[in-house]
Length: 375
Ligand SMILES: *Cc1c(COP(=O)(O)O)cnc(C)c1O
Image (spheres, rainbow, N blue to C red):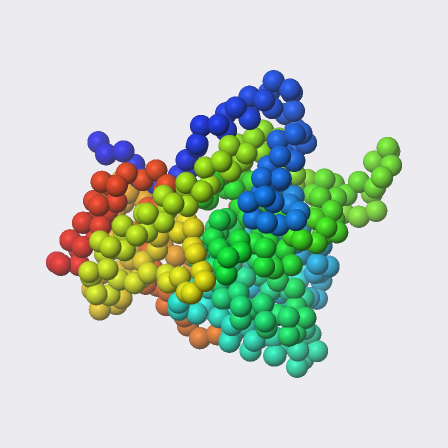
């Protein structure tokens, strides 16, 4: 019986257990302790960000980013439509309205033209959006030059959802450090994991101090648990942060392994006209968290055919994220763009991309796909 191949399984480096053991030996089994500070320092050193706060999830990080920017009831937040729901849900948590923006076909990320159309529309009606949430999908940097310029021109804050893009680079700088705030996720399927977790980074000290305050139940400085604001229980556990410390040691390797997966897939599949990949533009380096393909309609096979065929061989693949403006829960939300994200969704597939994926398996997957095309 074949061993099941997962899309993106956790991949430990070996030293994680040492930091977990340290937490146990010193009895720091709590959402406070030395692993947390050390993990935050590792993140700052790696990304070049001045400040970081380790949290219980990437979703919590986005929620706090919105709160520290003062986004609330009646505000509008522009958000990439082609993404995981966790990019958008926190906009609703704070009582604001998400406005979804289409993708452009090269990076599959937020389209600068549609973004500017949306901003101009809301500026005209006297409701300038408070923030934008741009996403670096599957590790691919979005068009940060253009997006930053637009946001600067209109004075709109940027939250970079780099949940999938830790270690990706744009113009020599780590993703997550371009926006006013950046977020990472360390969920079990991300490029590195703390089993579950996230982080918020920024060069603005007061943002990170405020986020830490809100993440730890918003306690005023008093011994008697006094509260002047609504807080949250969003801090990362010291045990999980230990896993994070170990994972940071292998992040560089993980990026090399994921990029090697991508290059092998590309070399084996690009012979088939009609299979396309996400493209790194000049100055961009993707961590290639997931290798994703587009199957052109002329090929005569759908992503769903391929997914089911792979599944019959115990191999997990997955459709692209279903765009938010097509989700039942957001069917009434405003949307700007044409149909780029919808078409990507309908023709795309995420292939197994684990950093420990055996090369023979990857070859099997490609053979299976090429075999389907010939028929
Ligand atoms: C995983 C992910 C998140 C959420 O992170 P969690 O740690 O799972 O809460 C947010 N945005 C994107 C694009 C993601 O892929």
